[in-house]
Image (cartoon, rainbow, N blue to C red; front, side, top):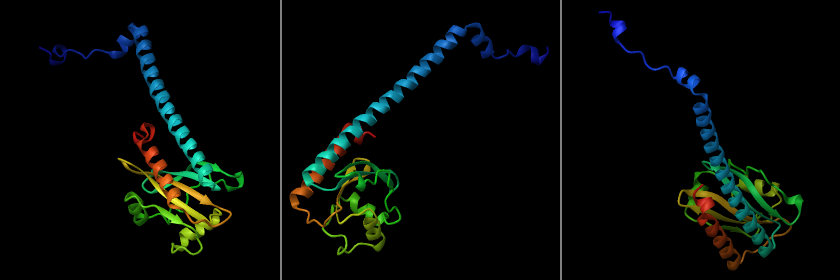
Length: 194
């Protein structure tokens, strides 16, 4: 007996697809719809998140009467950028800025992961790294308030308020408000699940 004749050949999928193009079309259509639905869901969550953050930083800027309020979002290990901002005037825009990533190292990250709030009334007299001070000068900051947005997954971003025209002593009420907004953002489903 010839061995090759006794082994059944596997079915040829091409023959099945050619035999029933309607079924193949239906399967492709279902895959396409599933992919489109996933993209639409992700876009809806992103829009919901961005709307929440934009409204929060606008309210924050108005309440604090600062020149700039922003969200610095971390897209990878201590690398991020300004993704949303609210401004007193367009001249203060830093949207898309990646910040001084070389200055933001593991030491700073650990402090913010622990909940650190950094309130600087005058960047010229604060004991900060020269790299950080030069960066702040470059974006016209005179006074700086930074609060971490901490989710269960870790440091999601930094909520930041800047006075660009004058120095400013940050009050306890201002700091508490920033912390409350950061906590609200961190607990929002569109953020904590991202």
